[in-house]
Length: 198
Image 1 (cartoon, one colour):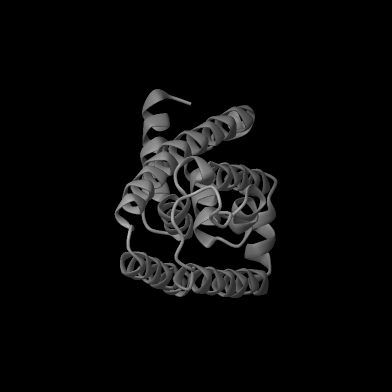
Image 2 (cartoon, one colour; image 1 turned 120 degrees about the vertical axis):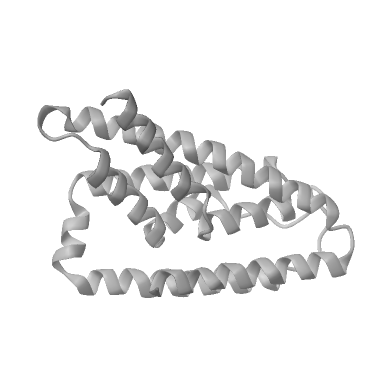
């Protein structure tokens, strides 16, 4: 893959990773509620989930979704329900200080599983493979570079979002600030459902 194509791919992946979506809302909320270090497993789970989606795209699972549109509809419905459930959990989270005794953040496997219901993750993987993979003998090498690019942008954007959330968490010293933040993030997470059906 030429350097220009690789940089274009990184720009595409960066825009996809940093723009609003379920992952970004969860990372920011987790950083605010549980702190940076306790939220790292969620970020790792999201990154592993993205790699799993990329592998599925590489092996043609998206072709099945295109062949059977009902699978796409089922994916959208499941994702919408999951996001609404997460939005409810976030919005109604009980007030806790950032201490070791606070409730646990989402776990690695939950961040990983979310990607299978996240249309933005599928679009990111499909768009990158469709736009930036090379035909013929260069295909596998180009998909490896796409995989590396996804890891890179997810790592950078994840650290930024967790850091942003952690900084916000330091401001959430009162019960009122905590409730306002969590309700706002719950509403924004629920609003991601509208993006799915747009």
